[in-house]
Length: 160
Image 1: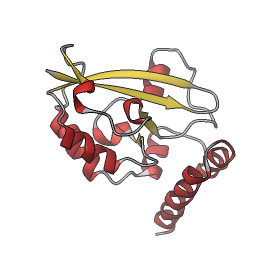
Image 2: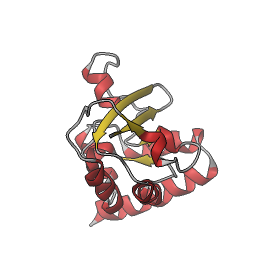
Image 3: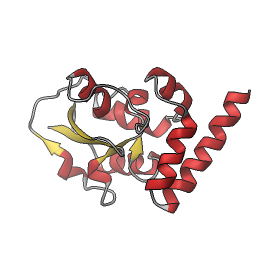
């Protein structure tokens, strides 16, 4: 038994999906741990836990021409969009598409410190302030407040 994870990237100019199959059957405890560790209820930075990014995969496959000023570092776990999923709903008999065991994925997410600056630099994204302005203009107040808080912490790191 393996675990199917649906990744969703969306910005003002792109909406990209990517399915990864991790070896091993995820447990409800691992699902709950992941849920408690996500930003904005569903978001994380895939590269910082060993998963591919739907945005980068679409660029690599030629579906998108590259990163634009609309893009950002966050990817959603699609099965978490309606709340914490049932672990059994994520189980599959499909063969793994990535060698990261589900236990390690859950551990990495639970201990991750999402480094926005590092990811923006790695992906050669536009200025962080432009990204924040676009998020403020398009997302809910709750998300905007959380992103503002993350930005404040990131700005403090830049000044250090």
